[in-house]
Length: 117
Image (cartoon, one colour):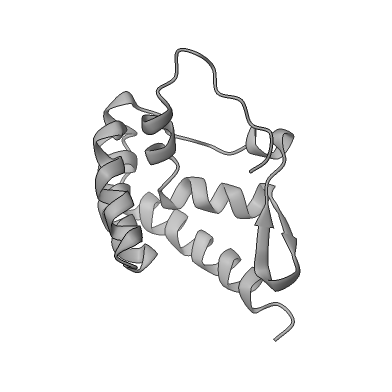
């Protein structure tokens, strides 16, 4: 993401954690641009179109997300936790809606990452 500004009343850590869910990742694939090697770029006008289920309580997830990333855990392990908290508990999506968002994200990201192979 480039040149994105955050409104003063938004908690940056909660905002960052709120991004780690299958729905936001699927929207990123749809709204962003793919470059060589599978790089996904999001310009400010594209970032604005991403559905981001922001909740101040998501702040609590960031240390866990950070640790899991540093421990090189697979993104699917992270999403099991974040989808439950962010999408189900905080945003009210059903299990089938979460599974649909996850399958859309996986299909689009696999397509981007495997393009040209």
